Length: 465
View (tube, rainbow, N blue to C red):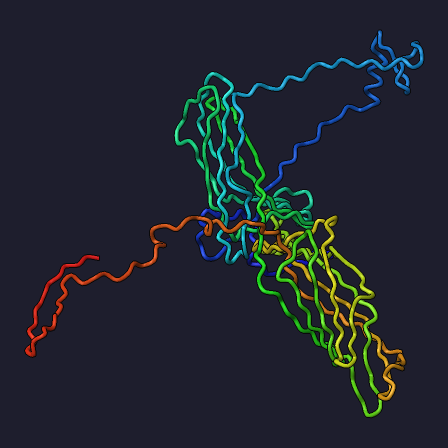
């Protein structure tokens, strides 16, 4: 579907957005994730120029197409050409990373997710006897790459980068000796961030970028992709009712709360109101065919950079693109039960996503990127007429209808045995419940005597809780 120009979109920001360090804010900030850096392709030498050079060189034996040298007996194997070894440039140090935390998974919806803790150690391996590092920092970046930008050949329109968090490992120049040096890092990723998504309109990726600058001006870089996923815990089953006027047909459908990219899920549907009795005859509907499909709707608002904001009508506006595709479809011809006495048709079938089409999980970002799924059911019913005295002798009337309805599905990753990080931590001192009430310091107790005249004796006790 071609893109539509949006005249008023306040949520799209063409300029760089602020950092997302403060994850405790109640209102999630928009996110335009990070950029892929594509290295230019190596230019290959033209074949015609190479043949011309080889022809001018003396003492060069030409090879035929079958791999043998001219002038040599047929079948002689082609000699292995000697190539000069490639020498890699010497670097003062190299970097690597050990991730200590489990895979980053946000549990539940963005409004209720507590986020995930990401921890690890950045290793700086020094190859020389010693080096002096002036600056050593690492950033967690998010990149959104638009496949349909406002300006086709503009890098700023195609990529938007957002810095989520940064680490400064050195506050002043430091001399490091030969060997490995580890720098631990940790960060609580806010739960409202959208998950990593590779769609047909745009891609959203996260990665760590570390840069160490030596005193000689050399830069040691390291990049690592961070895969962020979201898993929504299943809740109660969803029950939906659809009415198909002008008929009396009503469909009651039971759906699972969430579905997954891999694996099937059951769908139960009951079609009622299929029988209508008259004075001497009966009119009823018979289910002939049922089709179902799962549609995936991707939307993305392509922003414009400061140079091309005039194409979209000014700042704060963008072009809306939408792509709809079917990630699963099937035709059901048999397998339902028809009961004309109760006037109901019960249908049960299993549905599943096509893994080969690589379905995306549901996501919604304030940057204008969203993915949603719908289950569409189409039924073909034919009308029959039968006398009340002989209901078994039904005659088709020739009338037929196509009943179509759709239901929203939540496609998410499997949660497995994982739980949110805030539920895994042991109880702290503040979580201990209140203790029993304390005793009073001074208590007066009266002991009755056996005499008719009661004398009171008081005793003072000092009890401590």
